[in-house]
Image (cartoon, rainbow, N blue to C red; front, side, top):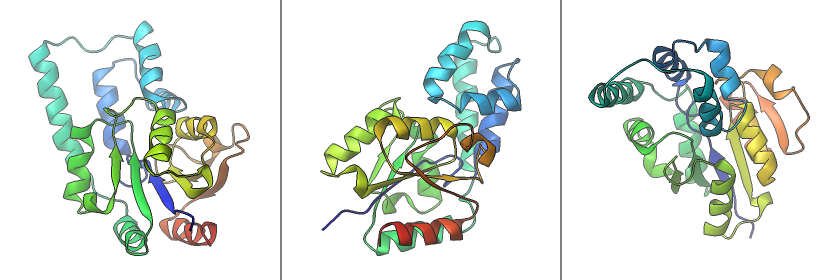
Length: 214
């Protein structure tokens, strides 16, 4: 029997944290704008940040100040909840036997506590944070090996063009949602063979998943 593996990005898909993340970045990098932040998310976030750092400087601070700032951000992000309808969706998918996974660029302290507070962490079989790898392409390979899965067994759900591009590289079927960082105009910048659909609501996502795995 074919496996049914759904891989969720976290920020902007499950957790309504996109605004908090953007505001944090702007507070740290004086030259950062909302549009510049959106463009960072058109590629691998970690790689794009390294490029950004070559020509931009963060606010001056001591190591203790940096740690305090990062801790404060982790607490602020913890206040971000799930998007409406997401809890019901993942709970239903779990009850129906889907293997649920998170593939996020966020580090553990900025991801696992959010999922725990939202009451959904136990519904995910594997949470692949930035510590597992900074490359989502590599994490797709880890997931495939871990579950002895074919690409057709997996469906990735994201809100950014950068993730779609990484899923293209990994040849993973993908759904784009429009309630996170990027709207549909980003997803239409170029053709994506593995992009199956763009959805604008959790109910649309639920219906597509049902049809896709039928």
